[in-house]
Image (tube, rainbow, N blue to C red):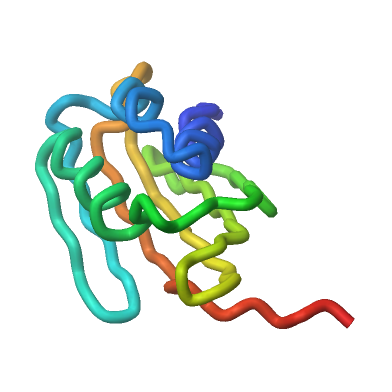
Length: 125
């Protein structure tokens, strides 16, 4: 089983553009679904623009990577889910993403991501 999914989750949580770029093929086939919109891209640049230009903006602080879970592949398609604790200008939130991906052995070539959206965090106590 590939470790690319878990590495991708850690790179996204760190908002590490070079690390994400290193994990995906230059011509990665990307589609994503958030609560309000469908996203699509056909290159690493497209993916980076969606991730760090729209989904996780500069003002959004990833406070913690709360969970990363991988599972057995569905034939040639692997999966990873990850949950993030976020602080945005609107307050504290939690978001979870489920990703399905295919690789050429070295890099992710096909990526589908479903996002929960930023959900307001429930105060402890």
